[in-house]
Length: 271
Image (cartoon, rainbow, N blue to C red):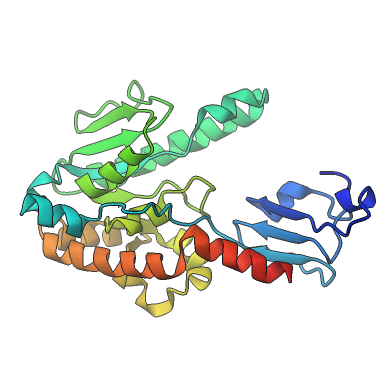
């Protein structure tokens, strides 16, 4: 990505780039004002000659992704089927092992372990022992030895993600600073799952999402153990409350945050 493709092209091809952070690109001199750069993390770089926009992932909406409401109609009382208290799906994938950079793998692995320990602290300091299931490529069970925290391994069937989101009373998001490419954020909300997200993350993305003051209608934010505990105490035994915010979140996502919406935005930006 060190050389602009248009220097070798005479057909005025626009170059589109989508990266996690603008700093990942390094030298931006190869880009022109005809190109479009998208970032996951909101960029603070000021460059009047470049078009740098924030574009987050979106919900994977198939023809019919079953929601909690759908399951409730089928089973009559789906609340009884929510047998996972907390689910936690990491974003660590096998792709990281193929880049040949052991230092990057080590650092990411260490950060992930720190996030697992943070989650362990949040959940185990609550008033009761909650059933927590962690899904991901790395098994930290020998380090985090808790009977109520179970490492379930890697997920190979994409549809099983939706099953987890529906089966869990609370889905805890893995990211802290900004949404990753393979985030579960939108898919949790798509199926009316209850999402608990760090306020630090929400501050990064709320302008993009258009949440503003009504954020609490779509997810449960926390910025401390006290706010985390308050949300759990309020919603754990109240399926009706969880379903209400889940329904509102699903409507919001289906209206504004499907990949169709992202493609429409991309086409608009290219004009």
